[in-house]
Length: 445
Image 1 (cartoon, rainbow, N blue to C red):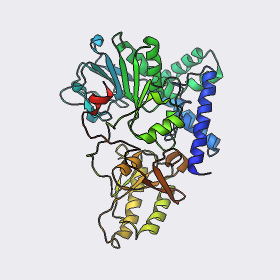
Image 2 (cartoon, rainbow, N blue to C red):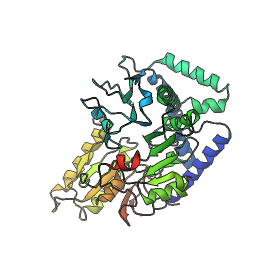
Image 3 (cartoon, rainbow, N blue to C red):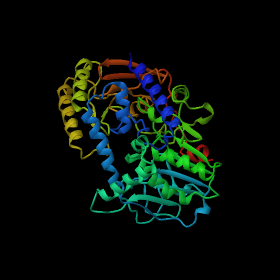
Image 4 (cartoon, helix red, strand yellow):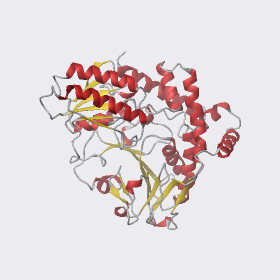
């Protein structure tokens, strides 16, 4: 079977799995084991791997599950700062990720997904989720910050025990429900909504967020409808989906409307991921504009490295075979959140050392080539910007892209772990925006 055939088969298994659990009264919207995530080691990842028959190491599976349960203890110190007293002022709520660089000295917040400042969204309350301890000196009244408090202890095992006990009681000792509810993602989804629900008022008309199908996102959309079924829920696919987009399968808790950025996304979400066409809305990307920097001449490392050895060996094969075809005067760019990762720095140095071997033999110092490693949407963005793209994967079925899901994509397999992509037509994968006002003009209206 081709990579695309296997991906389609896993998507079908995912749809059957969600349907079966929904019929068994499992809350598929915020179950950590229904978040079928193909890019990070999690309970959902184990399930996908088991269907693929590639995760037979029971000890590795148990290790991931135990680590996930223990990580519940790290959620003990989340707090909400700047609690707004004026909830009736706002008829729209934006839920987004909060990062340190987004907070401005005037108390506003600039969102990297919607590319807009909170001051420019009249009648809108911002609820920002920070996964680290971020305490801005000044925060405007329409910006709420859900963040971790500054505590010495990373883990709180009393908090873990309390949550385990509560979930067992809520499940009425049903082993199946306990299995789905005792995950870090489920507990986190409950935490987020407990804080957010206090700001959903009779005046609220819309809730919009960058959307990845995460349990806390589905929980917000699902529970919001219970408060007021007239509230319109809107998700935005802010980055092109990964190669195996099982996290986006439509389910209970999915938004009323999902904003996507291209015809190929419409094709995939409608034909393979169970979305109705009237739920999908194609708009130019807010995150990716036509005037952004060129992405050529670089090798991009991902957030997660599952097998550095596989990646390095595949790159070596590609370099040796294509040294006369491409300029290999490439810059290795580490992931922004892995600057201190020993594994990432080690791989970066190894790649740089082998690139030096070709430096003197390269006649052309300019390169239109971009090489992407692992699970990332970067190859698609680079294609739309005119780069020649090679994607090196340590897990091709979970990471690489196929024309079976994305019709405008042409795929050439270079070796077991490397793929070259080309486009049949620009704009079908990602419709790059021309206006910096696209959010106000199209998304929030």
